[in-house]
Image 1 (cartoon, helix red, strand yellow):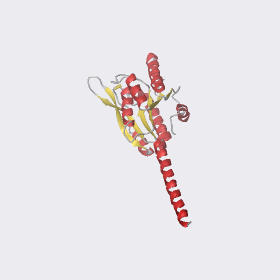
Image 2: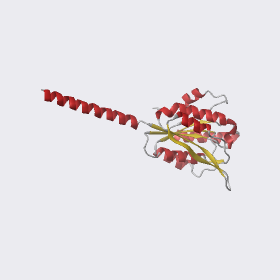
Image 3: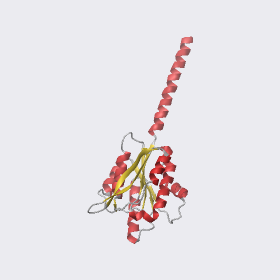
Image 4: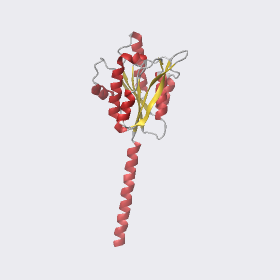
Length: 219
């Protein structure tokens, strides 16, 4: 009888350890990963303080739920000056480090390569270890001038790798057809990848309301 009881306790202990391991693995497998684009090109100059504030607010919202990488643009001078997507901090959940990275960003010149930036963020999100859910968040006016990639191939890659794109479209300072083109681009890119875009209607941003409306996945 004593042997049976010990055997039962041993089996129970093994079962509990296995269950805990499965639960832990399941939780790890649910981990999200984020890539945030801070648009630092010249067209964002007058709005850049708000761009940085929004970037920090997004970091504050998501950093507890998965690693965060931050991208912006750097100038590349040549025959056609271009703004090249650049990784500034990779896969961090340290909010202070992420905030310091954002504080160190500044506006740089060059023609915007927005789709190339999305491609670069997708490549970063696809690096091992894999996350179950991968999210790109762009804070931008939506202008793309000289990307080497085209939207069809970028969207195909995003959908293949289950990466959703969310965007805060600061298009209000663009004029006429430029505003319409940028808005349509952001709507198309986010809709096709299962994400969402919001367009703040004024410079007086209620950030918490905006983030609630945007609905970036955190679980």
